[in-house]
Image (cartoon, rainbow, N blue to C red; front, side, top):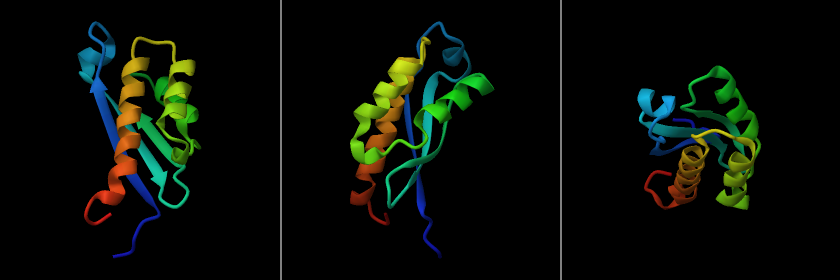
Length: 109
């Protein structure tokens, strides 16, 4: 089996109560496709309700270098999202980055 050049990591957080996200998903989810060699995010998605929100999330995070740590990515989200879901997205993104960092210690990675 040929090894892929990217890895898919996910992170989740409780969606804020009283929001459409909580009513439809209950959790905020972040999915990042990361280049294994460069640690750069090459694609992304999130459990946002609108196409515009998901597209904006992609543009906000794609290209970020995870070698710089999770804080810069979290700051991007906190600075550019002005919505009740932004903190949940930040927590979910931090969890996804942590999974990427820990993948080397897992068997078969």
